[in-house]
Image 1 (cartoon, rainbow, N blue to C red):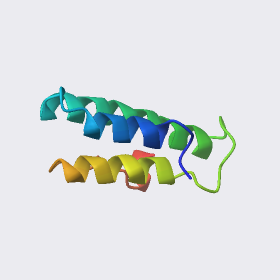
Image 2 (image 1 turned 45 degrees about the vertical axis):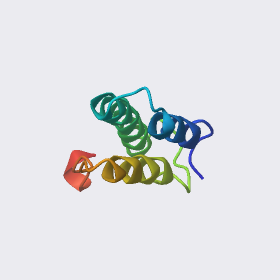
Image 3 (image 1 turned 60 degrees about the vertical axis):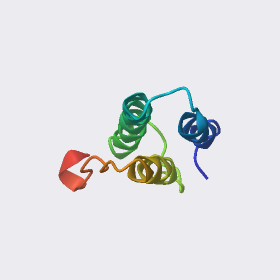
Image 4 (image 1 turned 180 degrees about the horizontal axis):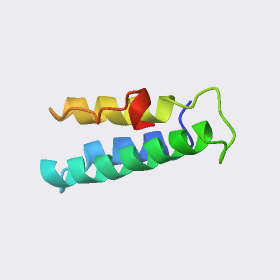
Length: 79
């Protein structure tokens, strides 16, 4: 499961009819950057690794794809 709050934040962003697509994408990109930073911290030993570590990022990426956006390349070299 994603960290409490992440899935809700994604759902809230997607369902907010007052936000234009560009703002939704910007907010999701910030969540994506935060999730990548948490993953990076885990691989560098700064945060404990969690078994569901990538679920937050997958949730955010699915939301971005639903808006027609591509996810950030997050291959091993990017971590």
